[in-house]
Image (cartoon, rainbow, N blue to C red; front, top):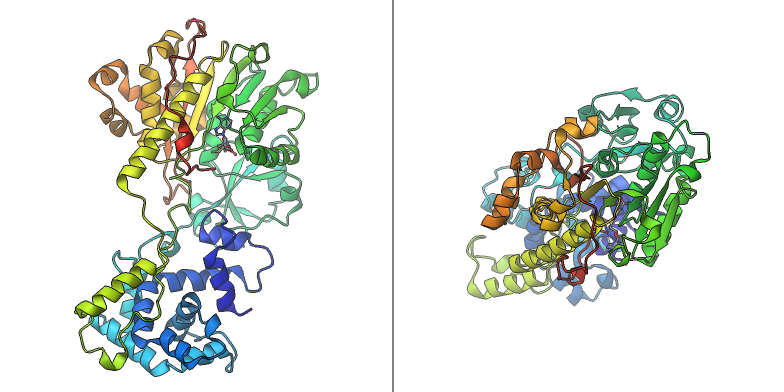
Length: 555
Ligand SMILES: C[S@@+](CC[C@H](N)C(=O)[O-])C[C@H]1O[C@@H](n2cnc3c(N)ncnc32)[C@H](O)[C@@H]1O
């Protein structure tokens, strides 16, 4: 399989794998060509795709090769043509294939017109040299040239690694797995190539280190044994925010799979109970709810690998909302962690779905007839171009009303979970988090919960910044209450006492910044001693809408 065929298969993503293009390529086993080479080709060709589409269509390559009936035509798909033409026009080494490779020959037959059309497009757009055109494309200016995304930034997402305190310690890992690594600032780590042996010990979350983007630990025995857990910094906030102590013997993870936060809870509880003589399974436990049975299997594997199977009890296929908080099983539950399915808008890579413009056969004007200026196509050609754009590979946009409706459904679902968690009779703390950047799923849920009469009656409030664990107190990006308050009515607004404290209590993480985190939101609720005992009601205090209408969950 040629480089171009393999790149086209990755772009097609027929297996419908999730995650960013980059993550998919680097995670793919058995690639014939190197992941960096494939990723560079795809990302570069994508940046140029709007330009290349125009060039290819005007040259009529797809039509000509089809007419010629060459045996390789079937393989000369729009995607492969785009990739080949990219390398012919823009890669230093040209097309990376043998001189007599049929696909290379098919494209090179059009060498003269490709070069001429490319120069025409460049000049029409006002770029005197290829270099100035390249600089413009790389700058990611929006419009038909592509867009800025993390591919062209010099900052990438670091590889965050949580040291699994159930198995090992930070000191031990620094002295063994990372003995040849130099300690550096986070910014140095963010900009380093994957194989560089530098790391940054995180200043906010204990037992967390950052390695250079795409650092590969998969072959280290520490990773294979479950001593190291790949977990984004932001995702470590909720369990840490709970501030558990030896008084906490039973904790619930309400939405657990794949289990990063479950094993983090177990590790923090083990640290809180350290020194006790009896086996840890007699000291504390985590009950992990996971509604999706398939994902519960992943959870089981993660928990076992992390060495937490003795203290984590998995409720496979169980809906947290269906459990009875008053059941004897839950009498000793003091803390709950809610990390529900959400829009996932904070996930790195989620918005990197690269708009790829593909050429279409029959869409272009042959070069000889291309007498209209680049900015002045005939109406007939204009119609064809419209069709070709429609047939292109860009994903269909989701309309604004759809987004609003989805966020409203998620917000209702999140509030329902939160209100359910607040009914556990002896619960003292609840951490609520999402990997969403939308206030509807974050601050607004917090505010709505706080304004509910029964929540206040039960004594729930936010855990103030000054009460938070040291690292969380130090974290600089706080809540965005301004957006949330807008959505509330007058009654809601006046019901929120101490707005600035609520803002300060919420933690936000932004993606694509030098903090190196994903987009995330976390907050903790606490119940003051003396807050009223929970009176179980008939559920009438719960929001009535169901969350099932939302299909685009983060998980
Ligand atoms: C965002 S993921 C959780 C990620 C997890 N906390 C971690 O850090 O690895 C949300 C999970 O909650 C599960 N879930 C959603 N609603 C649930 C419910 N009502 N009861 C139990 N699990 C639920 C989903 O199936 C999904 O696996």
